[in-house]
Structure formats: structure tokens, C-alpha cells
Amino acid sequence: VPAERIVEMTAVLTGSATSVALDGVVKDFGKTRVLHELSLEIRAGEFVSLLGPSGCGKSTALRLIAGLEDPTAGAIRMNGEDVTHLPTNRRDIGMVFQSYSLFPHLNALDNTRFGLDMRKVAKEQAKAMALESLELVGLGGLAERYPHELSGGQQQRVALARALVTSPKVLLLDEPLSALDARVRVQLREEIGRIQKELGITTIFVTHDQEEALAISDRVAVMHAGRIEQIGTPEELYLTPATPEVAAFVGLSSLLPAVVHGGTATIWGQLVPVVGGAPDGEYRAFVRPENVHVAGPGQSGAAATIETSVFLGSSRRTEARLESGEVVSLQHPADMRLERGASVRLVIEPAPVVVTAA
Ligand code: ADP
Ligand code: MG
Image (cartoon, rainbow, N blue to C red):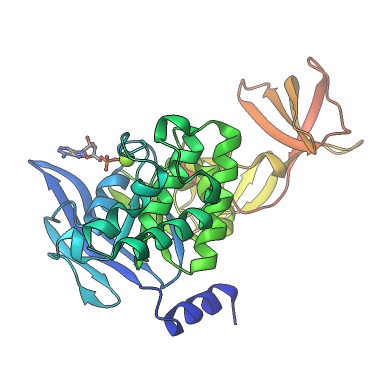
């Protein structure tokens, strides 16, 4: 049984998790169509990211799931129940946004218990639940602090505690890490992953940061211009991107001229399978840096000149310019040094590639 099925079954058995489905959801703002028949099924207990460039419709999709916007057409279901027209406060969701949305005049504890006080939970019980929620996000000792006495990362932890304190069925996160600096961002995303698995709560995470989405998600839905281009595990998206948009947005690639014949591309004389196939013709292929190598002695390949080489710790990333003028990225072991200006021959591995119009 795959791990995600176990998480899902556990969540269903403990009654704590909910599936979420979008079915042909359309959203127009005036005459502008922002979402085009979005369909998406998120399993109970699953962590799914909506990934795409700014303006592609991620927040709008999340706000529809939250009930903060009404869809123009289509349906939204939670555990199979139609919630399309249910108000936000009856959807049993917790939300965290990018900007710190804490009340500045309330301390961490009172910010956290806010949703419970609104629901008229008894005072002592609300306090105990809020403290437990703060404990969960690693802020047990800071309950008395006011927002201005907390770092950005700590404020987002309070926002998370506040979203979780009512034990919602679905957690919605809209770029909750993007205002934080790089180190805190990585720490907090790992923390969110841990908490999500611990609670088994169905989570939808919006981000424009592909590394973040790949690191944290069970599955990622890549969005482009109001459509889902592809949904899959991080590995599926990286290894078999369904469209040029996905190939370009997920991971780094060089675009190299390719000739396709009978479903196979020829790049630098090397035969390479084409993901999803393509009619015969001339294309450009997305080639990953780890699939480009310096040719060994006696091996032929494309002539190139080394331009830059950057040390990344366990590997190096090198840019080389072909005689045709194109720049190719390659990734190789750190102990292989390629000096600027050196002449090399490059070869590629026959790993499957995505192609786009030349
Ligand atoms: P993302 O979160 O991916 O950056 P959004 O969902 O915020 O994208 O926005 C998608 C598109 O919808 C953008 O072109 C944006 O300008 C437009 N949009 C979002 N909200 C509104 C609104 N309330 N009125 C009009 N246009 C909007
Ligand atoms: Mg947004």
C-alpha cells in the first residue's frame, strides 16, 4: 500500500480529513476569464500545491475553495458534499495568508484563540486549546508576546496556530512563506510539512516557488493562465512534464534544437525519446543540466566554450556556449573543474525530453 494511501485511510478512519474537489470551476471578473474550467481532486489528508507564475489564478482558486469568492460556473465539493454556495464560516477551513494578518493589539495567545472566542467556546477551554495549538507550531513559550515582539517567521507560526485551533477539515495556505528570508522559509516549510503529516489535515498550498512546491507536496498542480497544465507528484512533473510550460517552470532546462522523426528526437546526433510524442519536424527540446556531460576522450559531441562555473557544494553548475551561440547548462560533480574559456565537447544522455515549436 503506498504511503499516501495509508495517510489517507488513517485520516478517514480518525474522521479528521476531507477530500476536496473542483469540478469545471470557472471564474470571471467582469469580462475577463481568470479560471478556465478548473478540475482537481484532492484526496483526504493529501498535501497539494498550486504552483504557477504571478497572476495565473492561484489565489482566486484558493479563495473559491474558501468561499471568499463565488464561482461563475462549476462546483466545489468537500467529502462529496456540494459546498459551492456555502458561506466561508460553514466550510470548516483554516487559512493563512502571505502578509501577517495578526491583530497588533492582541498577544499570540489571544490572536490564536480568536476563532474560538467567536464560537463562544468556554474561556478556560479556549485558552487550553490555543496554548496547545501554539505548542504545536513551536511557540509554547511565547504566548504572551505581541506581534511586534515576534519575528516574521514567528508571526506566521501564530497565524498557523490560529488557523489550526478550530481543528478545521481543510487547511488553505496562500504563499505563507514568501515574505520570509530564505533560511526561515525553509525551516518553516519543513515545520508545516511535519504538522500537516502529524494532523493528517488536507492541505492546499499556493506558491510561485517551484523548489518550495516540490519539496513539500504530495502532488503539485502546475497552473498557467487560469488552467491546470499538469498535476502530479514532484518526480512526475520533473521527469515527465506534460507541456512546455511545465518543463519551463519546473526545474532548470536548456532549450536545444532538436529534429523529431518517428517520435524520436535527434539532439547533437543523439537519439532521445520525446515525452508525449510529436509530429515530425524541427523543435526546441528542454534538456536538464544533469543530462548534459563533457565528452570523454575520443567521443564526439557539440563543441562549446566554458563561460561560468558555480560551486554548489555537492556539485557544480556550469554554463557553456555552443558555436551556434546557444548557452547550455550542465551539472557535474564538484571535483570536476571546468575553467572559463576552456574548449570542450558536450554530449547528452538519452533521457526523455519535452519539445516545443522551434
Ligand atoms: P495569483 O494568485 O496566481 O498571482 P490571482 O488569482 O490573484 O493570481 O489573479 C489572477 C488574475 O485575476 C489576475 O490577472 C488578477 O489581476 C485578476 N484578479 C484577481 N482578483 C480580481 C478581482 N477581485 N477583480 C478583478 N480581477 C481580479
Ligand atoms: Mg496570489
